[in-house]
Length: 175
Image 1 (tube, rainbow, N blue to C red):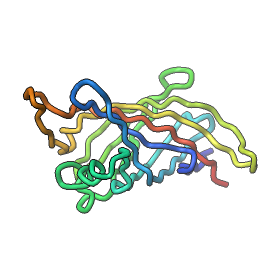
Image 2 (tube, rainbow, N blue to C red; image 1 turned 90 degrees about the horizontal axis):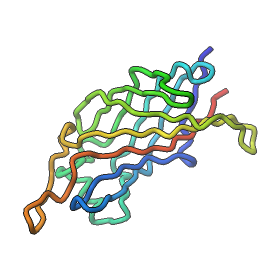
Image 3 (cartoon, rainbow, N blue to C red; image 1 turned 135 degrees about the horizontal axis):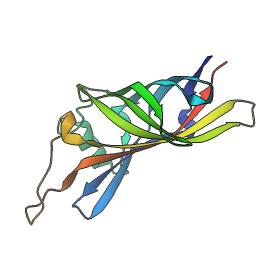
């Protein structure tokens, strides 16, 4: 029997990490997102759809966030959403799954593979059933048309190409 689960945004986060000047990592997040999943008992089979509001990007620096919303990067006015739709879900360990799906970013759709670590199921203080996952992966930003970069004084590139994705997702079981 399939159950529907909805992302609880109050108890979830969507973060990304990118190398800056090759020596350190900048972490950012998206503050507005939503998602829904259908799953069989024990999360043996999962179908998931996820949507992120690009304008909700937050790197703790308003000037940088505004630049990231422009055509140099996400072009949030033309492409206001990042979408993910799962195509497969496979158990690869006790509490580990491989989540494959199509990521649409800046008008480009490509398949990506993510790791989903199941944290368990609990009832909250109000009797709601919740499930937790940490979802991680890596994409190359150039694959999605995020090609902007600047040079350092020594001629190196300021930004890395790989973007690490880290999301802690709490799902609320629907009646």
